[in-house]
Image 1 (cartoon, rainbow, N blue to C red):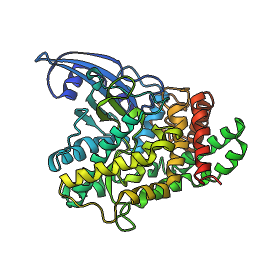
Image 2: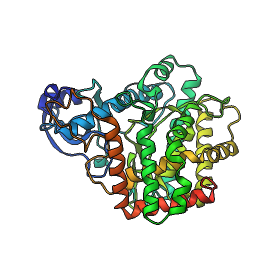
Image 3: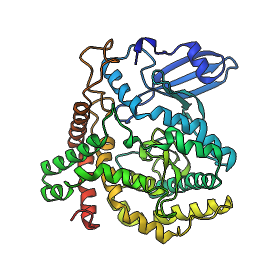
Amino acid sequence: MDPSTRRTMSKDYVSEIVGQPINSFSLSEGSKKGDNVIGKMLSVEVETENEEKLHLVIKSLLPLTGDPDPASLGQAMFVTALQVFPAELAYYTVARPLLQQVTGLKQDKPKFFSGCSDGQNDYIALEDLRNQGYKMADKKKGLTLQQVLSTLKQIAAFHAHSYAIIESNNETMNEAMSSSPLSTHIWGRAIFDMDQSIFFNSIIAKMVELLREIGEVETATKTERFANEGHKILLDLWRKTGQNGTKYFRTLIHGDLWTNNILFKGSSDGEIVEDIAFIDFQQSRFGNIYEELHYFIFTSTTADFRKTYLRTCLQTYFQEFEKILQDLNTELPRGFTVDELIATFYENIEYGFIYDLVGIPFQLGESLQDSPTPGNNQPSEGGSGESSSQQPDVAKMLLGAAEVLKLGAKNSPIAIQRLKELTREMIKLNVLS
């Protein structure tokens, strides 16, 4: 990676991004500290030569203004290895248009303008929906019942449309499943030839340490085994896709569906939901519905919510999935019933547990730096001129990032509360015994 060849914001570059000549543009920060952005984000207001006003958010691998510091370059090396920009670009340029054209998927927000994934000038330019009344819910509170049910209906439609086109043996979708970045799991990709299990499992180990430090010694002991098995549990569920008959039928999933990646339009208290838009498809992949459902439900709701509404949530998802497939004249996967859905969800409950163990410090920890991505707090000793050619001490960076996440969680009362509630929930469900 050579920072001297990167592109920066200019009138010509913005014209290229929006695909038409412009009169002017202005920039502002596109995210705030703690938003868990992988890469950099800018908010861009554009006036075209036709005097049309455009509002964009641009996510980029490297800063599009000023000079990148060593920390930005270190983060960019990891982000490039994870292929998050190629995956999201594949979603917006291949998968979503195909679903819209072939099955009539109505999910067209946010509008996609353009993108690049050359490993140097990676970016994704999207419509900024905040000007239209869309906003994130409060991640510290957890979603309301209406927000959860509305999200589940939307994701059920997304899964159903994806399943229908896969079942139709569409050639373009088949190619995407076999050769695009959507065919692999972000946690299964190596970072400089190093397996990511060291990072995933070390975060769990740090949560075990934190449990002990806050007096939850017995719970910590019961959780210890997941510090060795967590990454395997994670990938094992993904690898079940397409196996065991049609129980884990293949579909396209968002892959990172939690509160901050969902924009709601409606009342400020979340009790009325007029519309929803999903954002940040950087972990999108072909997988199975249980990966998505566990991740969303555990990272975006509280233990008390799940105790009261979990069955209702799964029933709502199934009913919408069934309805959409009927509309698309596609049969349900063989043996797929609401009872089978609920049973298989509980059968894989460990997946939701380990993902939330990792998610809590990422999503609810106090932000000690701009981004929790490994490399962000590990600048190369040689400065910006040398960092692009030196391979970092990957293990040291990953373990250092896990420690930073633990400290952030320790400094966050809501993260501590959720960690206690999650582990107690798992004890009641006999996951921790």
